[in-house]
Each structure stands twice: as structure tokens, then as C-alpha cells.
Image (cartoon, rainbow, N blue to C red; front, side, top):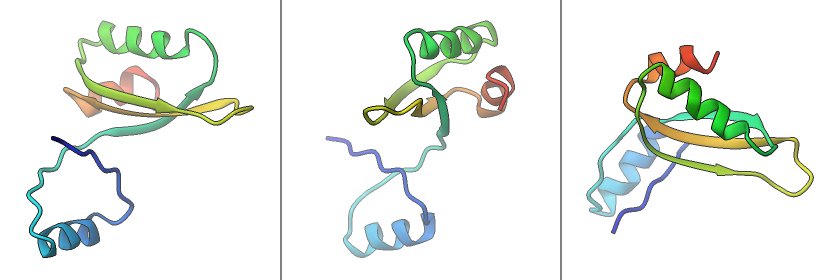
Length: 87
């Protein structure tokens, strides 16, 4: 199995995983907020497609009543992705 962690302190996370003798790998991902409305994620992914940026995986979440969603996305080229979505 695989568990993906988004951590605030990368060095502490590495140290804890090593101390527990847990094998791990690292991968950069984008973390951004998006409008919480139908079609918002489709608009973002269309911009990425036009920039020829592949999405490896993505997660999005929100809470009831929120106007913004939190999105985590691993992509083939972070710099191109940031430029494409205007971040």
C-alpha cells in the first residue's frame, strides 16, 4: 500500500519515518485553493492540459459552507503548472 502525507516540517517527517524504519519516497506537489463551485476544477485542469502539463494525481477537499476548496496536485512540471493556473 501507499500513504501520501503532506507535512509542514519535512525534516521532522523524514526523521520520524527513518526512526520508525519506514521506507518512504518524496514527491513535490502543488497546494492551492480554488473556488468551491461546479466546474472550477475542470477550468484548472483545462489550463493545465493547454500548457501540456500532466496530472499524476489530485485531491481536493472543502468544508460545508466554504467558498474555497483546498487542492493538492502532483504534476509533470510544477513551474509550468503554476504559470498556467496563474499562481
